[in-house]
Length: 113
Image 1: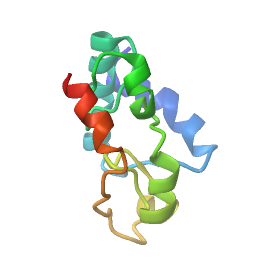
Image 2: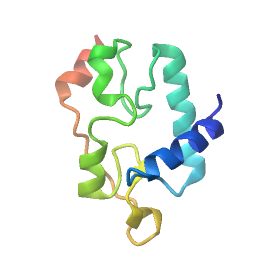
Image 3: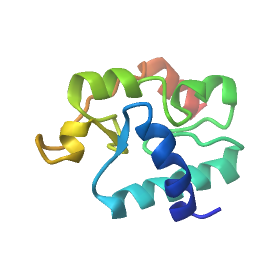
């Protein structure tokens, strides 16, 4: 599977849940490629914008869609990496925001080993 195929597979599934891909398709496809790289590297699609440890139990909060996506999109209109956005961001009614990291520092430090 390549990035375009992953995009086409996931877009309707996530849209049905009220989550949309960023309208910047080039960025989305880069993130999809990162997800596929992490799947090959770790065996699961860890967020490419965060440091993965390679241990599923440590990374399960950042397996895409991450555990923080819903709260980020609800509060800011986008998730941390900008892959998922609200309808307002998708439709250009609001700009893509900068989203602060919600993942606890301890989890990121654990990924450093």
